[in-house]
Length: 250
Image (cartoon, rainbow, N blue to C red; front, side, top):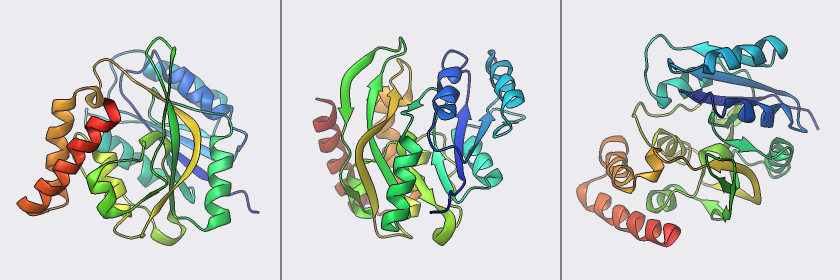
């Protein structure tokens, strides 16, 4: 089997505390044919200094610095534009992968001819202590199903550009990864889960995902402004989103 290039998309903003662990989790991959494109969104901490050290040491790691703070969608899309790989993978600058993540997931995709896949993931705190909890995603995802609940963690997602080309995130400040999954699922009928925990999501105190009210607000914006759903469809899917969210976090 041909060892296909994987482009790893990493948006960074003020993650000096975590970026080393993130990059090291990529360097430790058993699958070594990758490039890591880190786009910095005008960090004010030591992020750039840390990233540049890795750039000097490994030519597979690339750094792009935005000229003005533009948000994660612009940062990620900039990296996608620069990507050379057949496969596009996502890893934020505070999250981690297990060492066999790429190997297992790329094998899974090629063996089954899947264009879009994701995995389960574990949770870790800012203090690097595991929560002892695994988020188990649904086995498959469709467009209508994903409108009801987002089962795809950004740090687990990989899509294949061979058949569907490069797909970009909508230019919104929050939930842009969710918007991308919906875009892809308008092209391919399903996304498939490799039912193993191969990534580690860092739960941070002030993250958007930890603020349920803001998350709900941006979920509604996805329905109405990005997907252009009518008011009745939006209410229908939002009710499912709220119920599923309650089940997920209870």
